[in-house]
Image (cartoon, rainbow, N blue to C red; front, side):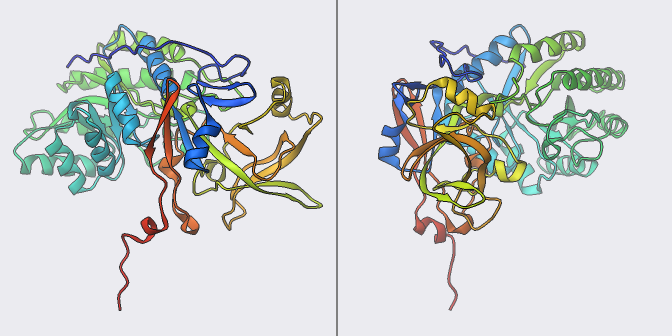
Length: 451
């Protein structure tokens, strides 16, 4: 199958002076943060805080970077829905030519509801249920990424019961260290993901001549937020070797799925451009003659979103100063879960950009102080930043938590019975609400009281 990736019409701009953030479309104009030309405060006036705000121009820009980087390779860009599942964003990606990487029946449902072509969907995940497998087969997805012998047998049985042949890729665990956070490392031998190479070869051989299974690809995903290209080179070389061995066995491998995990700039170390990853991929793909599948998520949407929040109280103790905000760990859990860094800055700020740079480097300029930015949830782990240098602010001031477009709303919960926030998509100086704020009634709607 030959995939056509549609170029995106996009007038490129940059956020002048926003060091490290030139690839997004959040910028300060007249001391106020704008998203795609829309004042963030005007959005907040309508939907209140906390709220997620996304930039469509940023999403298009980052998708276009991938298109240009991998030009000349037969490439299917499968957006990883686990990064951001909003139907409006999925629909926009479909219009750009994207396929999808799903890891559950619910994500498959979302992709199809957004209008995705089933033939451009790959299904990953270590624990697919029989009902999920049946659902994916009936939908006609491109392939499953298989992670265990038991799963391969389950897919074989499901396909046989339908008198059809299921297409699969074997996910290889290459035992490569991606040099990322231990909780998002997936390519080491001790993780739950993928098959060791020897087992994968044996399983591939067992499918030759099968009426119910066809191994058409190999797959590997070694982790997330990877900011070095070398682990990809090591992984793809091992996959290329396996493809050669499988073909000698009569296994018709024609897809190499390199996974995702491309890192982004959260405000400190620079992440590689898409072109750097492509430089590593290109010679290996040309050598093995496979179509390429990549599964980016964070790379496309990570820096395309912010979480806007309001300071409820400024609390001063002998030990610390706190900005207590109305967003919480149930809205954005990454700092609590991964000790993740997110750049934070006021929505309205007349201070020169040099002051922000000084603050991010740990200096304490005049008019600034070291604070903890914390939420209202009854957990000590409910924080967005610790010991962060920020301007002196007051109750009611607005803050923007940047780089919240990936693994933000998708990981939100109702902990402490807190309704989840709304989502807004900004584009060309306008915006629209793409998910309303939950209500108290929403919290209890699925429940029944038994008397």
